[in-house]
Amino acid sequence: MNAPASLKLILATRNLHKAGEIRAILGDDIRYSTLDDYPGAPGVTEDASTFAGNAMKKAVELARWLAAGISNFKFQISNSTFILADDSGLEVDALNGAPGVHSARFAALDTGAPANSSDADNNAKLLRLLGDVPLAKRKARFHCVIALVEIHPPASVLEPRVFDGVCEGRIGFAPRGHNGFGYDPLFMPDGFEQTFAELGGDVKNKLSHRSRALEKLKASLR
Image 1 (tube, rainbow, N blue to C red):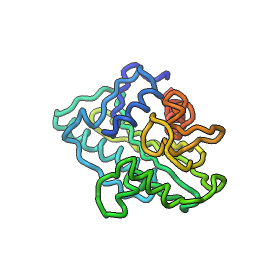
Image 2: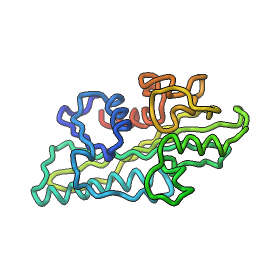
Image 3: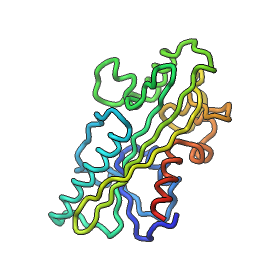
């Protein structure tokens, strides 16, 4: 990646799996931090109806909070500081696009709990809803939207840039594999009989929705 050597990328997530994938795809010539490095960062309610809406909301709200801290001399930034926020999920055709933006809290929707559900509970609900739907009709896709916001000295927040990526595939009949997270044990990308959880990180990071969105982001920073 031919990004500026001093580029700093703040990942608007505490999800270690997601942060690890982003680092693996973008490479080591960037200085990374996550929300764990900013424990006072405000929580963001992901209530938009689209992945793009949620990604932009997370990126802009974190950027504004950091900009306020810069103005109060609480934080310092370089000339190349960016906020990256990702919202992504699984869209299943047989379920009219569900779980979609509710992917992380799919099972919790049944109880009204505000927190995200466990991966196991989300996968179990998905399999229950699909039931005996044949494989040919279990078409699905992972969809990722990334919002990138630059904080420009002294403390102005620039308009977000948005990048999207999609990976088409199918949903299997039972979880398989021990790598990855989320719906990876159920999702078989087109051209493969293995799930993402069986294929492993190296293969997934060349095919995934997130890698395709990040490739577009990388091109914009060259």
